[in-house]
Image 1 (tube, rainbow, N blue to C red):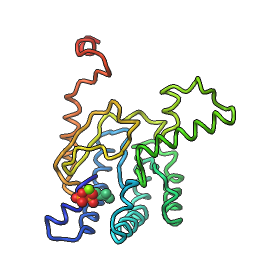
Image 2: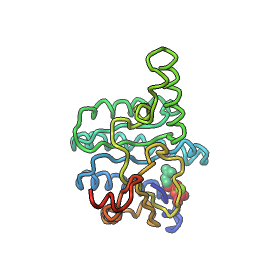
Image 3: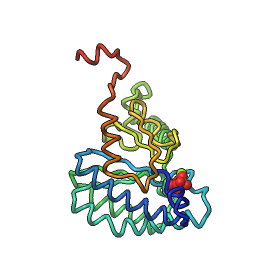
Length: 229
Ligand code: IPE
Ligand code: MG
């Protein structure tokens, strides 16, 4: 979800206004995705690199995050959304960690949209974390090294219980993955748009899905093999 700062600057406003507008977009897009029957949606809200921003902006994002949890979780739960957070949450204030735990507990049994929010997340962190957990299990004798294949490895990374993403969307014009779901994106269709996140809309989401629908997913096979299957 990129482009909040530029959106604000274009309007001669403070970056905070961009983040506030971005929050409204996020709320709308979660609703759109649920309405469109999307099974799982993962949002990159705060990366492990975003701590490098000025302290005031980091503080502001944390406040917004806490306010968003307070105002949205109840409604999301009523709409059957299952919420989880991925990333290293130990870096957040205890209050925020508690709210995240509560949101997950409250919505754990919901059967609707699986919403994951990546906070203090990095794709490489995720892979390293998995490698460490595997090493621990091997060390304790729970896991045989020779049984570690891609499938086994995948069960140790975040989002292990949901399918790899079909579609990746990055707003704001940059054509980068920026250390997002490095493991999971291996076969994902990548969609980049210049639209700034606060301007993203249900219509833009529709355009991304239309792009996706036009792709042929070959997973290493030839086009002929796929179209005759
Ligand atoms: C993305 O918008 C929001 C977060 C990282 C929280 P940016 O803040 O990166 O917006 P730009 O890139 O400065 O426009
Ligand atoms: Mg940015």
